[in-house]
Length: 125
Ligand code: FES
Image (cartoon, rainbow, N blue to C red; front, side, top):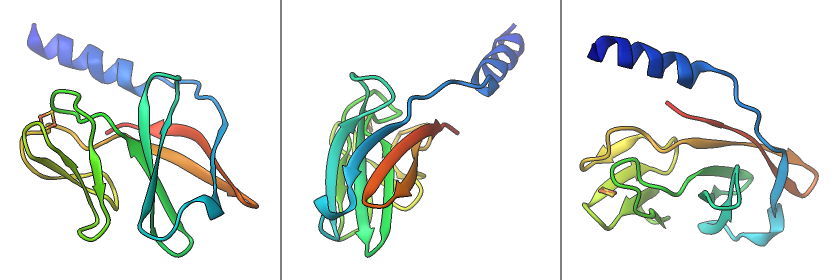
């Protein structure tokens, strides 16, 4: 029975989802090492945009995959931490580094058009 539920969940997760296309920031808004909180894909789902290096921008869901606490960016260590149970994620790819989170942080797909950083979708693994 559990196997059927897992298979149904895998199919559900694989279904294409329509995401909004939305400008989330201007490239000049963030200094290197800076971050910005925004919402995506809905107006109640917090995400975090990171500027870890010149011309490099990445964004992730800000909701910890363990118990949904917000994560915080630490540019000096290039990681995102969750204060609730000491979960840690790589700020490069959202993968779990330490603690109880069972999955990586979903990544926001970003496109750059001129000075605009545009969210076009999310990758959940
Ligand atoms: S809620 Fe983030 S580690 Fe538990």
